[in-house]
Amino acid sequence: MPIIAKFYGLVIKMYFQQAEHNPPHFHVVYGEYMGVFDIKTLQMMEGDLPVKAQGLVQEWAKQHQDALLRIWNTQKFIKLPPLE
Image 1 (cartoon, helix red, strand yellow):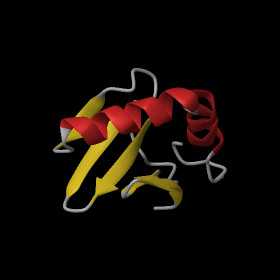
Image 2 (cartoon, one colour):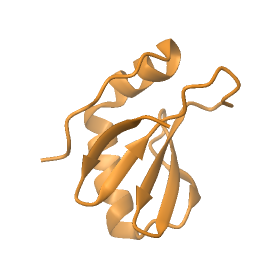
Image 3 (tube, one colour):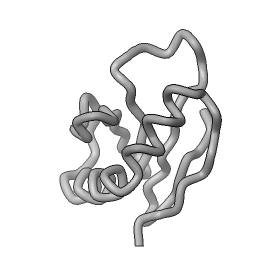
Image 4 (cartoon, one colour):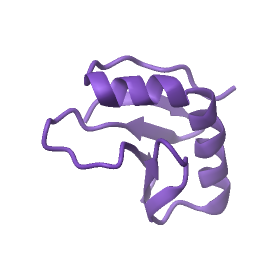
């Protein structure tokens, strides 16, 4: 699973397989925690990320929502800048 971005110990990844299921989403790993976020709503669909980490991911994803959807739809990997 390619890494889209890294910041504050959070690693953002997205599967690149035609069989990947909807809704469009990305995965986050933060130490022993993980989460799966819906790109359109930016809500965590599953996982156990701490609340503060969820907020950082949502803030980052809001800044890059269009690019995340483009990556999902085209399956063309690009790295996105970290949250600053």
